[in-house]
Image (cartoon, rainbow, N blue to C red):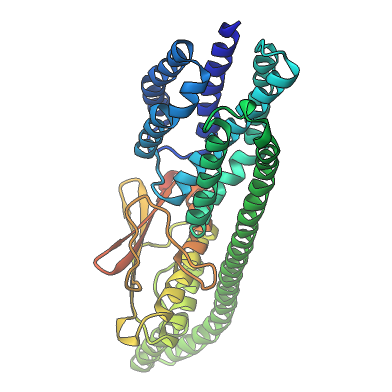
Length: 431
């Protein structure tokens, strides 16, 4: 009947991988991740099962940390996008959940199954897929969002799960398997009972952080949208006022020309041009984008920031809602970042121009000392103060609606936000 025990162990090892891979973030594409995982973990699993058949469960239970846990830890650490607390917490959670299922089914088989391994195999055939379904249905998506948005606290949680893993391993297997130490069974059962309660507490704390992050991010997005709408309203009011003024300018010019006063008409026209440029705060011909830039130009002036804007767009029809959202979100982050700097270091530049089939936008500003973001990495943010990262999801979403992409990174004490959007997603005449 030991064949049933060996099959149940092989089944367990296979499903430990599934639970872990549902939760961790690989730095490689899915296909490459699956191939490398199969090539590495497949032989390790087979060797473990072979050792179980050759040396027995008691011996393998004492050395499996060395023969399986540590090799898999090193392999997945190499594969993982996360290298610190996030990875170790995810690894320990998957391993501890699996070890908990293995321990429970061992006890059920020992006390209720007559040590024939039928109940052990049946329990694992049910519990592992159930754990995977629960992880996929309720945990996977919010947990990955949690990894993206929460950066603090992972080390402490990883340490707690690692201690539980070691505690469960030692209490189950040393000095002998726990079924041979009935006097230790009450303590072991309490450990089994306490573990899911502790994990529930950990995840509740983490999801509270996620909820707070979502709330703060939502407030930032709403504020950026409010700023965009206010800028657009200012632009519409300016346009209406300008149309009204133009009627008066036209009447005056018509009177001067009718009277033959050409020189006076030329001087008056020059004054009109100068006045309209001052009124509009002209950065580009598009009134909505111009209004957004003018709004943040005033905010930057209040911060005594050095601002340079180079906006190379014409009067063509543009998806101004998305572009204004991108500009507002990015410049709001810039203002927040510059507030933390000395006035002499407050610098920002905004460039917008076409390149082939894309419209490119770059914002570049001085950033606080110590901020380092590599290309493609998530931007670290503080949960008590505003930072670059809060507005970035809204910018990314707006860029994707225009078949574009967003990138950000630090370089030579500057934070750089690059956004590229496809001209093919722009409205055409008649739409």
